[in-house]
Length: 163
Image 1 (cartoon, rainbow, N blue to C red):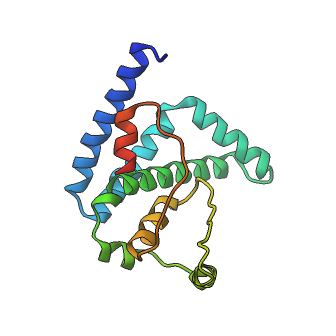
Image 2: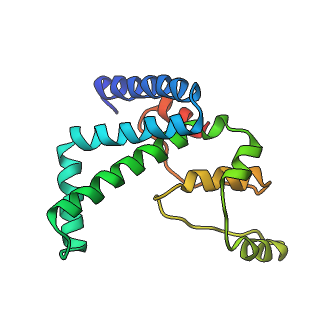
Image 3: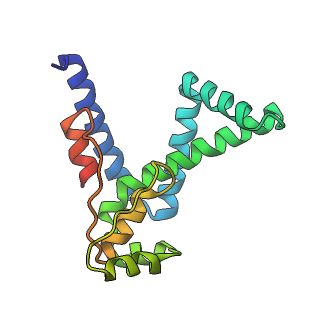
């Protein structure tokens, strides 16, 4: 059984994310991206563990790069994650038209061909990039989307993410 402290932290996080979502929804998409990038930079600066892990992974994957270049890439990735996070908080409130216009898809004919067989299709994606925007686009196109994921540790967070 989860401790009361962990439950409070989880529910407090869900409340904070709801507030962030409200604030983001008052902005246009460009303003939402700016807030997301700022959030990414803040997490990058505050989370020493994530910062060090990012630099270690970059050094392992690209040892030929200078330390300054790895720092630049890690910061840019943090900004990107912040932008994607802000986007995911606002996706459920976007119009169908916006979702259809804002996503460019290649290879959809492969999915259409598989679906034409009448047996459905299973698409697998990694937890990277704008996978949630892709799911929202597919839903807006009329595809039945059934993501497979575990619930968040806090019920309030699960509810927010499912919306």
